Amino acid sequence: GASSAFGGGDKAFDGACRAVLDGLSNPPALYDVILVDEAQDFSPSFLRLCYSILREPKRLVYAYDELQNLSGRSLPPPEKIFGEDEKGEPLVTLGDDQRRDVILQKCYRNSRPVLVTAHALGFGIYRSPPKGEDTGLVQMFDQPALWEEIGYRVKGGELSKGAPVVLERTSETSPKFLENPSSIDDLVQFKVFSNSNEQNEWLIEQIRKNVEEDELRYDDIIVIHPDPKTTRNETAPIRSTLFNMGVQNHLAGVETSTDIFFRKGTPSITFTGIYRAKGNEAGMVYVVNAQDCDTPFSGLATLRNRLFTAITRSKAWVRVIGYGKMMQNLADEYERLKEKDFTLDFSYPDDELLGKLRIVHRDLSPAEKRRLEQTKKQIVNSLEEADEDELKILAAELDDKTKRKLMEMLGISE
Image (cartoon, rainbow, N blue to C red; front, side):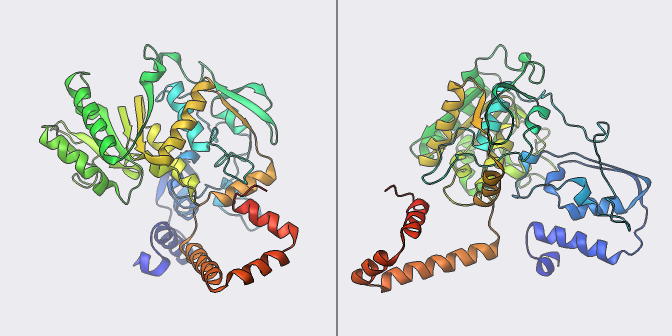
C-alpha cells in the first residue's frame, strides 16, 4: 500500500511516516524513552514520529554513522529534523552540550590500518582525478573539524577548507593492541583478478585454509557482497563449491529468518548482502566483487559508503577482492595509502568544490535517470541524422568558450 501511494524503496517508509504525522493532530504519549540505532538509514520523518509519541520530558537517543549511509542521503541536524515551535524556535537544539551530542572518537572494533583504509576508500582520498575534474575526492565532511572529532589529528598542513592537510590516527583513538602482532599486509589485502572465476577460486581456497589450517570458527568469517540486487546469483557458485567440499554456509536473511545473521547450532559461514551486514562483525571479512564499489557514473558516494561499511565489519582481517579495471582502481588507491603510511594526505575542498561533490557523485532519482536517458537518445539521434558537412559547419560556428567546455566535459585535452 505504501509503495503504491508514495513510491518504492525509501519513499514508501518516509511517506507512511509523514502520513501518520499529518494525520495526528494530537499524538498519543506512548513511551518514556526511545532508542534508535543505525539512524542514518531512517528518514527524518521517522525520527519526528518517534519524538512526537514520547511523554514529557522527551528522551530520544539516536545513534548514526554518516559514512554507513547507503541511501545517498545525509541526516540533517536536529534543528531541521524536529521542526520549530509557534515562535519559530527549533524544538530541539544540541548546541555545545557534550552530554547530548556525543561523538565516539576511540575505535575498538577496527585496527588503525583497517579503519584508515575504510575512510580513504570511502572518501576517495587517493582516487585519481578523472579528466576535466579538479579532485578525485568522492565526498567530504562539510565541517573540517569533524575529522578531529572522529579521532584524527593534524600531522601536517592545516585542517581548513581550501588548504592541504595530512591527517593521522593516534594510539589514543586507535589502540595499538588491535594491530599487533599482525603485520599490516596480513590485516588488509586488496586482490585484483582477471575474472570472476579466478576470484571465486581464490576465495574458496582461502576459506578452506581458514577453517582447516588457521583454526578460524565458521562464525569468524563473513563474505559480503556490496550489490544487494545480485548477491544471491553472484555468490551461488562460491557457496555451491563450498557445500560440495563439506563447508556449510548460508545466505543471511534468506536461508535464515530475517533477524538471524549468524546461524546458531550448525557451524555455518555467513554470506550476506551489504544491508544485512550492518551491525554485524567478524574476525575475517571478505568483500567479494568489490569492483561494484567503483563507477565512472553517478551514485559513486553511495557505492563507496557500501565499501566503507563492508570493510569496517572486520575485527581483525579484511580481504577486498574483485576483477577488472574498477577493482584495479580501488587497489591503486589502497597502494597509495600504504605508501603514505596510512595517513590521509589531501587538499580540503573549498565551499565551491564541496557543492560540486554533492552534485557529481550523488544518486540520481528515477525521474532524473529517465531524463538523462532521453537527453542521451536525443543527442545520439541528432548526431546520427546530421551528415558530416553539417557537423563541420556546426563545429565552426561554436564559440571558443563552448568548445572548451565541451572538450573539458568529454575529457579531451587541447
